[in-house]
Image 1: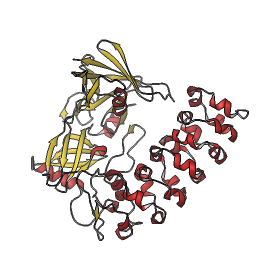
Image 2 (image 1 turned 135 degrees about the horizontal axis):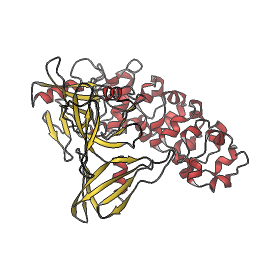
Image 3 (image 1 turned 90 degrees about the vertical axis):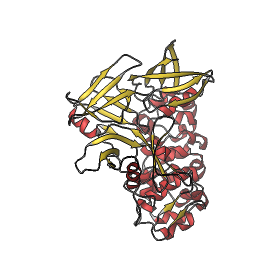
Image 4 (image 1 turned 120 degrees about the vertical axis):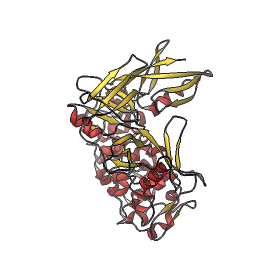
Length: 471
């Protein structure tokens, strides 16, 4: 690799770029780095980029910065963050900033922080935000800060460490349509604004992958805490009480359970909040529970917080502890990959309602393709049904945009997909099984017809899942 020239790099195929390991990458001379295009950078293995040197980084062309992905940024040594040239830093895509770690955040220079526009500020993770100290305020662009979308602005405010920031220090950073109590730090959002609440700590374990979820025992306030008033969860329980005063919400491990008001009441239903769709309700909205067009429940609190909830398995930890080798990967839209030893994963969405079973803890599949379901039995004898749903739903929807006949697509809470094809309604029923792509695969998501009633979706990782097409 030491003999590679820019021309060698420029002529390399994407698969070859993606297969480059740490040792090979480390041996590239800085001059060779000028041959990388943005599309090639995008294919680099994050593990290889973890050994990138300052000289290699400095040699990359500014236009290649657009290829950086969040996981690649997160893999880089913290001390490299200050080595981006101003032009390189400006050319980084905002999404790449999702990968910045707390250690990298503290390594950024004041000039770099000041150069971050609203989208780059808004992309920062809750953990990166929590690592900030109040000296960043002297560098931050106030106009960019106040221009952030509602969900990004509220994410920043609720995840600031209240021991490092005070309401008075932040009053000049509040958008004109928002307000903040200078004494308590309580925030008030305008109708229609996207919302985020303080994030829970990382919930991942060796057997469970969880999305970033909000701590509903917090408030819409600086640092997620303010004196007086309800927490989000208390407001949601009050809204639930308007339907049935004998029910309450409880959150544990990120999962939101519906329980009776008795202290020893077991869960009746289980959900996770849809963090991407929380908004401030229109003025005058009444507290209560409604359903949206996909079938999701939406809880509206007296404070006007509208929180959609997605069905979820009620106790992932108990399940993985009871079934040797079981792994669960829960995504932000509730789709859950269940992997048992020696088998391909299945991808499904839980029925929120909890029943009981006399069977041993396990995952029991039944039904023919297009009409499959599974029964997940927990060690305490409770159980939930799971139905197939499409993997990577955002990628799936983007893939359908290349099919001009497709319109009005909805991924429903029961796992089915409804759409119109040339104006005619169709229902798609995903199959459970997902065939994983080869490690390190990076492809453009696509949909291929297998026969007149079966199609196959391939996501960006190369994972393949079929679905049945029903008129």
